[in-house]
Length: 191
Image 1 (cartoon, rainbow, N blue to C red):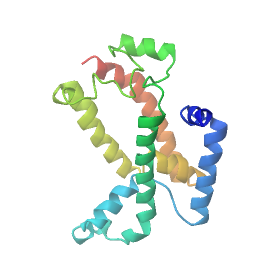
Image 2: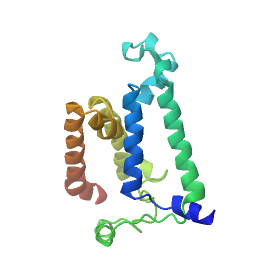
Image 3: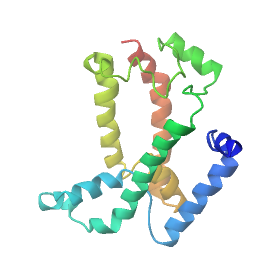
C-alpha cells in the first residue's frame, strides 16, 4: 500500500499521463463531446437563469452537466492530491529559474505553487498585487471568451479534434506566454 501511495504522490511521467489524456479525449470525441473548463461558466450562468436576459446563456444547459461533474472531479482530485498525496509543498523548478526569479525579487521561488509575496490578501491592495490579481484575472477571462475557449479546451480538445482555430489559439497562447515571461513580467515584478 505504501508503494502505491508513493507512486501516485509523484508526478506521473509523460508516457503514463499522455496516454490517459489521449484515451479520455478519444472517449469524448466518440460521444460527440468537447472538453473545456471555461464552458462551465456559461453552463452555470444558464442554470441560474442568465438566458432570460442574454441570448448567449439561452441554451440547453442540461446537456452540459457532464462537464460540470468533470470540473467538480478536478477540484476534488486537486484537493485530495494536495491534502493527502503531496510529500512536500516545494515546487521542483530548475536552478536557473530559481536564480532568475530571485534576481527579479521573488523570495524563495519554488517554495509554493505561486509566490505568496504577490498572491495574498495583503498584496491585493498594492499596485503590483492589483495588476497581477485583478487585471491579470480580467485579461484571462476576457482572453478566454475572445479566443472561444480556454487553454485546456483548445490545446487538448480542439487540437485532438484537428480544429484550425484551436491551433491558431494555441500558437497565440505560446507567443503571449513567452512575451509575458521575457518582456513584461520583469517590469511588473520591479514595481
